[in-house]
Amino acid sequence: MTWTEPATWYANLASFYAAAAAFITDPAGNVLLVKPTYRDHWVFPGGYVDEGEYPHDACAREVREELGVVAVVGDLLVVDWAPPAGQRPRAIISFTFDCQMNCAVDRFELPGQELEDAAFFSPEEAERHLPINVAPRVRSAINSRSSQSSIYLAGGIGNPPPRDGAPDYRTMPEAL
View 1 (cartoon, one colour):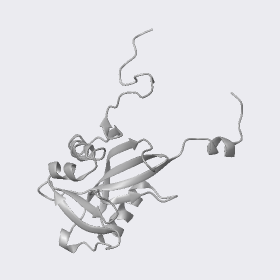
View 2: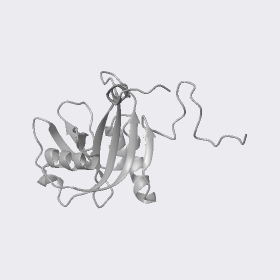
View 3: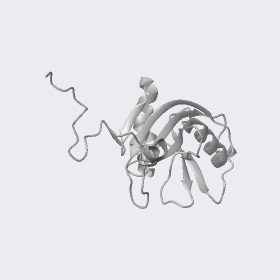
């Protein structure tokens, strides 16, 4: 292996985007989603992580900016690695956190230029309102809460198969 200047080495590493989302439910287990003005579908409250910002801080900031309320950001429930798609040239890592807040939907202060609505949906309804590759995060977040263990998804798929002929590390290799 040849030694490479750190600046060059880091510049050649893969880069990706990061986003943070809040998984918020009401006492009946309904899931909070928001409807952006610039999308055809609903999303979890949240957004991109700013440079130098921790994902859990981004989650709290986004909830405050989008809903006008303070959320307590708890455990990491789901990490979802999504490959580049459409106009997004890089992969994105989405962190979904278990969040609590102490107010009803009618207390939200939605920024009209960004969000047109916020509502609680049953888990099944929430899955139908979300893009197909994001919908699995609902069940994964619910399961993560129950098991008290974070869940890893790749493109919305749990325990994803290897891509492009890569070895299958999901199984134990046979003894040599």
